[in-house]
Length: 430
Image (tube, rainbow, N blue to C red):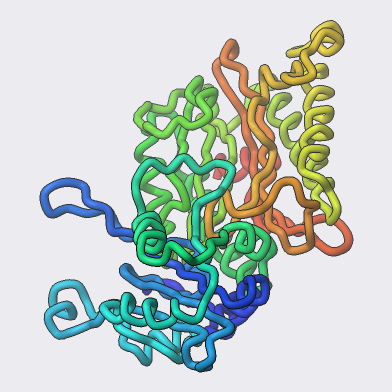
């Protein structure tokens, strides 16, 4: 691996926390992701299923974690199954984890080869009452592909119809939403790598450059700093393309006088960062562009202050909407009549700012977190307001990643990344 892994004690702690929340006499099983085919003998690069990674640190395909905290034999309370390595695999793919390496990485003492899983599960099933299944219940999920987890759940229900079932996801939603110091350090590293990429762009961008050339510069900087690359599909949107929220074609030439909306960030050790900046192709904002930019920046700064323990998600977004409404009135994009006649279900500001202000971030870009629960210290959120004006040919979004503190304002993990108009213009002038 190219990243520095977290200590095995971190993964021991996450498993202990999960097992403490399980029902008595129950077994939880977590599967790795599939390696997905493309065509012929081509496959997509492997990405580990984040829950098994969170609980083991094992970043390898065809791995299975089994937790049975009430097992009579203490050795069977935590079991990790990994693909058996051999000389042939070592030559063609690179050696897989040995049993001792799997223990070192995860802190789990009992390691079996993958082919032993069915036998071990059958033996243990005689002593448990409930299976915890790891279903995907994220509020944004829209998965159409059958996963290894799906296939396991179907098989387990057929083999053990008398057992009860429970869901792992609600437990993981609570655990993964609150980050440890080690996790925040990984996210900070991803943010620091992102900073290097962004600063590189400020020297590179000029009229005539292509969006995909900007993407290439970022990819170079991320990879050379031990990231696998982008934390998500990059958005490099010049001119009116900034008003397409998920523009990812990155195919246009950047013209003098335009703005470029850059929603681009690095990952590190499977932890994500999430940055948005909007910069002028020519190195200087027009007065109108600057006015809209600073309005977005003020909303971002004020919204950040609201991310404190006890804040309720729905109320937070309502307050941000009021901040944005005030700014849009000041810019002349809304008038008092628009506000007075607005639909409460779709307020007037939504014409220019139609997406949410924040989301959890961590092992997933849109990370786990139950939105009906109050915010807690050490949750990590994005803050990303925007104003989109197709009629004027540009849009502005600004985004940082912040950590909720027990007391006081959140810590901005991207506080060193240029964001003020004057600093951006100065750096682009060189």
